[in-house]
Structure formats: C-alpha cells, structure tokens
Length: 151
Image 1 (cartoon, one colour):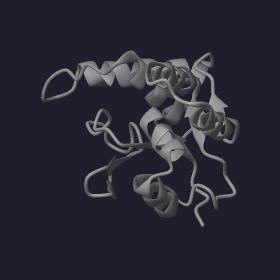
Image 2: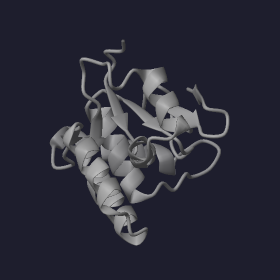
Image 3: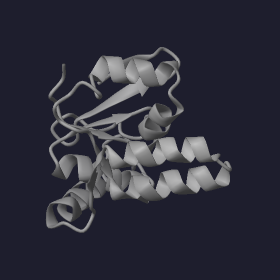
Image 4: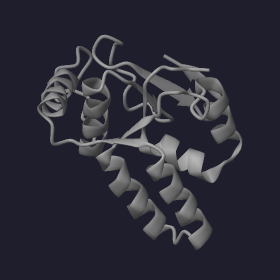
C-alpha cells in the first residue's frame, strides 16, 4: 500500500474514469485506492474533464463515474501563494530550458504548479513534464503503450 502523495494529471483522471486496463495498471502500480492518502488534482482538472465530457457527449453513467472520481480526490486551488510561486518558477525554467524553450500549455503549468506546491508526485500519461528534474518537479510519466511508469 502506498502512502505517497500523488497529484493526478487530467489524463490520468480520465483513464481512471474509463476503468480500462490502463486504469487498473495505474491503480495497481501506485496503490491509489488502497492508499491512506487521497490523491490530489488541480482545480484546473475539473474544468478540463468537464469540457472533455461535454465535447464527447458522455452519458449519464460516465458522468456519474466522473463526479464520483472528483468527489474522492482532494482539489488543490490555484489561488494560493505557494501555487503561484511554483507556477512562476516552472514557467521560467521551461522558457530557459538549456536545449531550447519548452512552451508548456497554461493548464499544464497550473497542474505542475499545484503538484510542486503540494510537494506531490505528478502522475501523467503525457510527456509534457519530462524536461524537469525531480528537484524541480517530481513526476512520473506512465507510458500508455508499454504500461510502464518511468521517471
């Protein structure tokens, strides 16, 4: 059982709602359901998943599963000085990245800032955060094709 603090990227929340093999892999690997520590999400994820659900015309059952998932996660608000400071730090680092500027989407910046401010490990299925070293942002990229997490 894991007691590590995780912040879930929007793509991980969507995967968990789908309840597919990747969702089972993520839950088994990171012990999300068995943990005494509830995973975190950024308030930005609430907006992102609702847009996705509306755009894809999710049915009642899937919307209920989404709401249940959101209700069982701890939401980190962006209106906190530590989150704002982390946002600035992450964006400045990304813009000055040694091998060339990494222009991150603003939602990804806020999600990363929430993880950093909460001192949580960010779980994601996209590679938008791989340019950070663990001291700047602790993140785990979950390769959806291989089903293996890599740091």
